[in-house]
Structure formats: C-alpha cells, structure tokens
Image 1 (cartoon, rainbow, N blue to C red):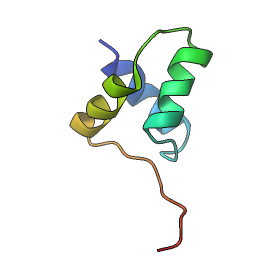
Image 2 (tube, one colour):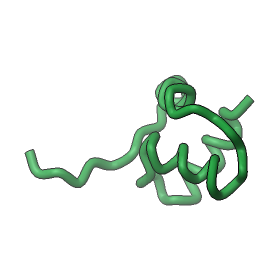
Image 3 (tube, rainbow, N blue to C red):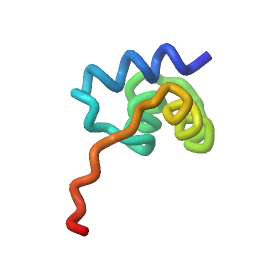
Image 4 (cartoon, rainbow, N blue to C red):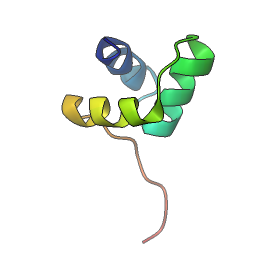
Length: 56
C-alpha cells in the first residue's frame, strides 16, 4: 500500500533519507498517517536504506 510511495520518495531525495525522514515525508509532506514501525520494514523489503554520516 505505502511501498510504491516509499520507492518514489527515496530516489527523489537521492537515496539519503532513512526510515525516520521517509516517515516524516509521508506524514507531513503527503498527509498520510502511517506508523514508523510500518515504514522501516517496507524499506527493508524494497532494499532501501538511508546513508549514515556518523563516524565509526
């Protein structure tokens, strides 16, 4: 249901956004009520992940 929107939003942000920002984009930007717990598994199934900028 939300998977096509997630796969559409992720390339638009150049693959940088992770589950938190995708969730914010869906709820604030698109007005879709979806839980963060739903976005993360859908991104994993689609093989999408955000970039991590933290030093290790």
